[in-house]
Length: 204
Image (tube, rainbow, N blue to C red):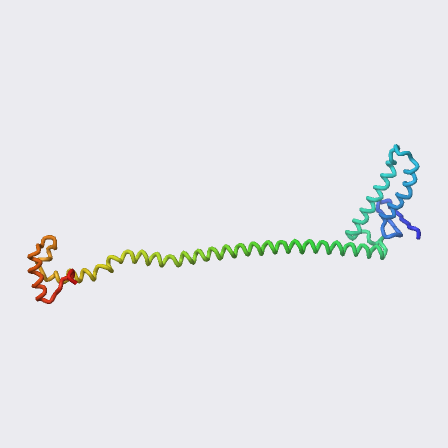
């Protein structure tokens, strides 16, 4: 049940490591607790921590993280065993699922925003169309009103003018205007028109 962790550097600076447990980082942390825990307990409280041991711990952790990063990028995979490759594959699958989920949510948000814009444009288009239809329907009514207002004098007075001036056309005495004709001339002209069978329009 012993845990073995081995870290080697080649002459070219290439890092090689082996760990019998599932995680090199956990083994290093356990080693740090077991190795330096007794030393810290035996030292006085006011003593400063050993900077060299802290440096070694941080350096080892940084190297483990760098190796893990290279493995995630597909580098130095020949040093991994089957179990480590399975763990790396599972980690990559989880990361890929997270990336796809984030991308899908982003696309759905964009689609919802486009749908809201489309709805706003459709409502604006309907309002403009309704206003245009109202303006188009109002043009014939306005033209008809204007035309009707101009033709009212001509449509109203011809019937009266025909009844009023037609019989007076036969009487030369009344053609000069009714303001200069006295009552005797009107009485004389009336029987003459009655004899001829014409009735003045103002008597109707």
